[in-house]
Length: 140
Image 1 (cartoon, one colour):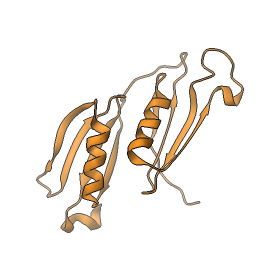
Image 2: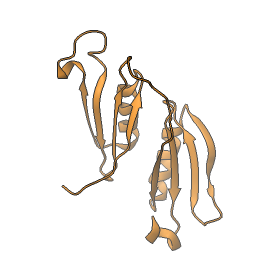
Image 3: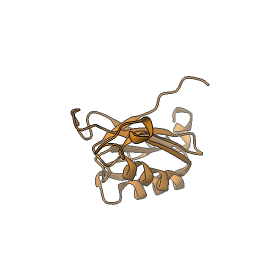
């Protein structure tokens, strides 16, 4: 397997719901392992130790619940960027993923010529969507 860079999201007790939501919007295959699956007992056994979503578009998104004894800062300093030239799919992803969240910049043509928008989803994850125009497709 070639090396790849994948966002890994941290949640506090909502990893299962968030990853299932992303799976419902983006499709693909979702695998979830709980702390209990790894032998942890007690109140955190049902929480997600590791989740991985691999879509048919070859997006890979991973995440887990942060144990209570660890610091958790929602959103942090990361955004997930979806970029491409399949305008129909990207507009649908924007609409579906932003439902229940906060759209900070609606999808619109920007000064660089692409359609671009930003939002924070209902789980506190920040997203950017860029729809490349025909003259920018080679850069997407």
